[in-house]
Every structure is written in C-alpha cells, then in structure tokens.
Length: 607
Image (tube, rainbow, N blue to C red; front, side, top):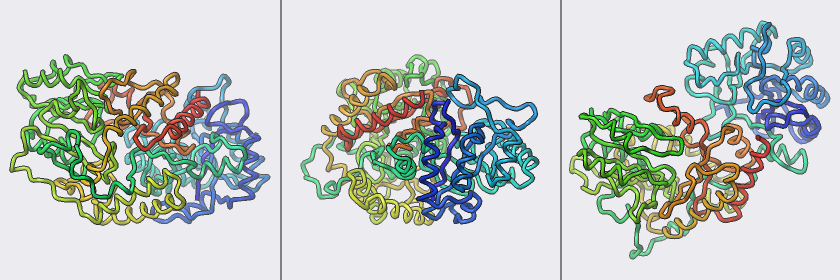
C-alpha cells in the first residue's frame, strides 16, 4: 500500500508543494480507475505490528490544510468518491489565526488555509481531518515537554471543532526523532505519519508516506502516480559487489595503503577499531581534541572508552585552522582527532608537526578518504593511528580498518572473525544491488525479500543488522568475514581512483553553476568519496530527488547531544544545508548524466 502525501492544489503557486488542478484531476481519474483508494483509518486498521500495509491499496493525505483544497481538491474527491485525510495546523483555526510562513520560498501572494466553516463542510461530506501540530514548528527542535504541549493543544482544538476523536498526526516536514515519537504517544495519538528522506524503521509512530507525486515528470497522469510509487532507475550510493570479485585473487596483487601494512587490523565496522585505539593509547579519562563536525558514532566509540572530548571549530567549507587547534591544547590534552571529509585532506601535515612538538598523539580518521593522498603520501599515514571505512569505497559486506604504525600491544586482542554464513548473506545483498543497478529482472524483488529476512534475523543477532548510527558494545572485538579480504584483493585500485575523479568532475561540470561542490577544486591525489554540496532547500531537494528514483546522501545532519546548540554556528549551517551525490566506480557517464539531470530538474522546480 502507498500513502500519498499532497500539499496544495492550486494553479497560481509554482512550487513542489503545489499541483495544478488539471493535473490533480487527471490523477484522481487514474486512481479511481486503477487503484482501490481507502480511508486512512481503514488503512491503519489493516496494519501489522510493524506498521506494514497490504499491497494494491492507496491512501490520499494532504498536509497543511491550504485553502486551495476546498476550491479545487474537494470537488474532485467528491466526484470520484475518493476518501482523503487532511492534516491541519491547528493555530490557523484560532481566533487570531496564523499566517502561512512555514514554506520556503514564500509566493508573491499570501497563502490561505481552510477556515472552520470549510473544514466542517468537508467533514460532513466524508473528508477526515488529523493534526499537523499546533503551530507547524520543527518538532525535533523542541524539548519533549514543549512538544507534548504543542501536540496536545492541537489535538484538543481539533476535537472541539470536529466533535470527534483525532487519533492521527502528520509530523511537520515529516521530521521526527525518538523524543517526538514519545511526545506524539503521550499527547494521545494512536498513529503518526512521516515523509522519509532516508531509510527508517516503520512503526505506528513513524508510518511512511510518499511525498508529492506531482513533481515527478511523466507524459500521463497514470505514469505520474506510478512513478511516485516505484523507483524508475537505481543508482546506489555506494559501490556494489560484482560476482567475479568473489573468485580467488591472484597472489601477486599489489595492495595500496593500508592493506599492505602488517599493523593493519580489520573490524566489523571502523567504530570498533576507534574504541581499540583509545584502549591502546590509554585515553580513558584524558582529553582528546575533536572536530565539531562529525557523524556521531566515532565520538560514541571514544566516549564508551572513557575519553573526554573537547571540540575545535570546523568552518563552513570543512576547513580546520591549525592555530585554533593549537590554542586549545592544554596540560591534560592527550591527542588530537582529525577527520578527512569526503576524501579531501585536512591540514594533516601541519597537525602532525604540531602533535609531535607538543608530545601528544594524532588520530587520523580517513574513513571517508580511503585511497586519497596528499603530496604522494596516503591519508591515514601521518598520525599515530589511521582509521578507514571499507564498504564506502570498495564493496565489502562491511568492514573497517585501523593501522597503528607502532604496532598493537598484546593487551588488545586481534578481532574475532565475523561468522562466514552471515558474511555470505551480506555479500549476496551486495550482488543483488549490483544486478538491480544493471536492470536485471527480479533483482529488486529478491533484494526486498532478503531485506525482510535480515530484519527478522537482526532481532535475534546484531551481527545481521545493517551498519547504523549506534555504538553497540556487544560488537566490540568483532572483525570481518572471509569474503572481505578476498574482495580487497580483487580491486583495481588505480581504476577506482580514476573513475571516481572522472565522475566527480563530470558532476561538477554539470552542477557547479547551481550546486557547486563544497571544495572548489579537486586536488591531485584526492579520491573523492562523493560530491558534497550545500543548499538552503535541503529537505525539499532530498524529497524531490528521491521521488524521482535517484539516491542522494545526507552529510551528517544530526547534532550530537554532547555539543550545546549554537556552540559552532558554521557547523550548524553545514548540518542544515549539506547533501552529497554518489560518484563511485560503478557509475558510468550515462548514470552520472542522468543523476545530474534529476537534480537540475528538481532544483528548477524548487527555486
């Protein structure tokens, strides 16, 4: 089942949030003929415990309660006998009202919302209503009590007006987190609906919907809706596993850094190697200078090991000022942790010299910079420890690598092997990704079946869970499986570097006038992990591109709770605006051009 989410139906607002009445009429006609459209309450009643819905059904929802719904959508829904639910911003129905200021950019004319009389008229005709919060704030920015108060106020006002229960909530902007989901439940809602821009676990308080089918280009109304319900083309974010890579490699293959180093250890994920680095360097209870812009799990690994982080600034172009780092070094500082972002080098030579001068450790995080160099020296080789993520650059089922030039102490045990059967399951998924990328019939369906099976197994064992955003203590000391080392030896590394650079430059050529990369140049020696850029239309571009069937990545949008809000404004700006596009070695010119075209088309409708 697909739950479709529309916003406004009107012709005088050119926006991804608005669909022209004529186009909406075509879609209603097609839906009435080709789909069984059911009421949202009926759909919820058919959900299983994981918020999964039976197939072949469709639900229509509308967010925000814009005034154009009464004039344009309501007559069409009535004519075609299509049930629908409208999620209202409760404050717009108060005596003082609320101007529509939550959409960007605002149109030249004021946007109206449904008034009380229109809401009651539509309800009498069978349209259902739910809550879209009281004031359309980003609920993830509120503390839990403020969130509960907002949602309770919304639900109370709507129930007084409608004289019936209001059990359903649609999160403003589709945004939610664990705190918001708890608040929704505490406020008395039975279900809440999201608009996922990334894969997320469905639940009664995170029921996914498909956003804005109106922005998908197609020749017929039927194709428009069909395209909103399915992926038209698959361009994965990370490289896939080609079947020949599982064959035995030649014994004489020359391996690049860090694979040729005798002091390199392999972990299930790099975060568990970071934990062992902290143990090796006896960093528990000691201060480590840490960049303010980071993913989160790398810091969680250090916190689990007892490290005391102190943050240094990262500037808007992902730049680090060595002098700022130097000023923060104090008598209790034991190490500096530096991250190479997206394959581009931080000022690692200067930081290494600084650390040697002050007698402290340099921990070099090259998780996003495997195969990159500066001045013919590999990133990850300048410090006392180098950290690498494997599966983002080469198609291993999982895996991180850590190299310690001084060697590992006997007190830190070698990671135990990842179970072979589970490694085979992961490898099979990467092969199915490869087949789906190449358009092999049935591969997508097989991969979806495999994903469901892995989710069931993950309830029994974390070894089967896909890499996520948490540090799981039960996985400390877990290594890679038997396929990872074989796959490492089957790669053509010079070709990988050349293709990634070519793809990056091709994306830059097509996109830089609209979405320039964060780093203006591509220096010699850089093996770019992806094409990072910033846009003030971040959330809308995410949805628009993914609705068209393309993959697009989020560049660490979540703030870690250890950093006070507003402490690093430039980092806050990066988290709110940064996205990335894949440029890995599996993508040919046709794929890159298609991906760039999708992004340009989306931007033309947003701006």
